[in-house]
Length: 122
Image: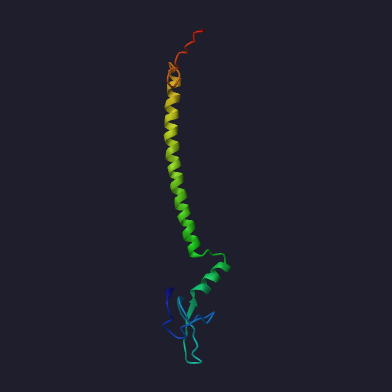
């Protein structure tokens, strides 16, 4: 089966909608009509095939492409977050190791406070 812009063999129209403008799915199948002397090729108009697909629960290609793109973006986000989590876990493990070995911080974090000067009363 392949998509063609126009039917090359008779009757060259959609076997369901009888539309003669493409694109069509060329089924490659001929109906055996030897009684009337013809063997028509079966073509299905692409919009008709898409409608049939929707009726049986299939997703249109643009929707599928969009969903696949979103899934790929989400996979990349998850991978970046897993790397960030691994780095944070490594740092946390290092802090736990230092605490378990009895290391303590000698002074508080940040800059030392400035001494307060008492104002001289007049």
